[in-house]
Length: 368
Image 1 (cartoon, one colour):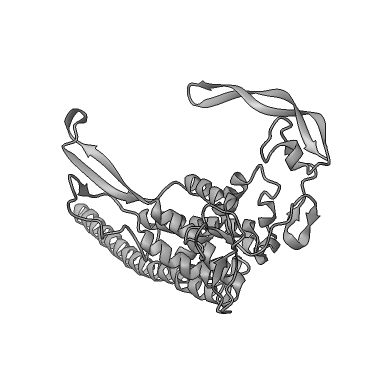
Image 2 (cartoon, helix red, strand yellow; image 1 turned 30 degrees about the horizontal axis):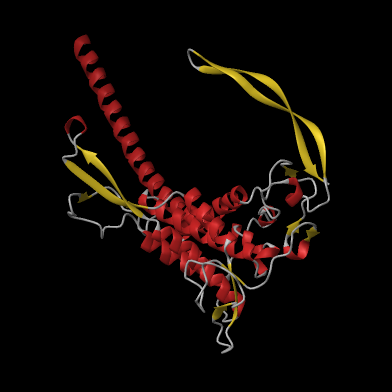
């Protein structure tokens, strides 16, 4: 009798345990379903918020650009990253010039709001071109990395070529160029000469990237042999593009509106320039400007000139960074500059690096 009672008690306990587990499982499934639905809803809300954040946080977008942003927020985010990179690259390329792109850093964070972007200088032309190139490169590379939903690799490069096979991921400059043109050129829809100048320089920056996109190849085979060669189209390095644009800036072509008053530009005939000799219209890859630049020696907020007072210069250089050129004849002060930097770094197992702080001194020259 005692055994039967024990068996009965055990069976009841097991049944109760099973019912509890089933109840918990049912509750867990219901909870998981609710959590999943909630997660999807949160995802939609988060995406909507992220779109709104991207499109609102970047100040100074035109109505057309905001429409583009709402349609393609991820591509617009890549374009904005390209703009930010372009400002840094502009500062690198112009580091030894009187105007060094520092005025492009605005409160809004949008370089198109800088005063110099409202003018027709060769510096304006350079900034337009380098920003367009930066956007095209950033969007194209984001496509190739699979970061954007609306684009990827350029699939038109496929099959076999002459002694090679198309493979890898060819950069889709076609998509990048189309988006960049729509996004940047939409800022200048009027037919006046300055808008024509801006659109021309935008295109010149894009063309330089497209023209320098080259076939890259890699060999496959035993012991370094090249039994199979795989190739793909690859965009150039941004630093190389920017350097070529700097050369274009040094040889920028002065233009003026044609007499026909249709907004078209023509090369100023008395301008001595190897790029424009014998031509009435500028080349598609020329950088063009409408008005002569000021000397940028003194501060002038109307043209975005911070002046050169306090700028470092090289007293032995005859180039743009030389004290004679940089200081505009005002002279310069010589002082001993001390700086602290990390030095004598050693790696310790495992795993940290230990460094010392070293003091260095050097004589520097600063414009008066």
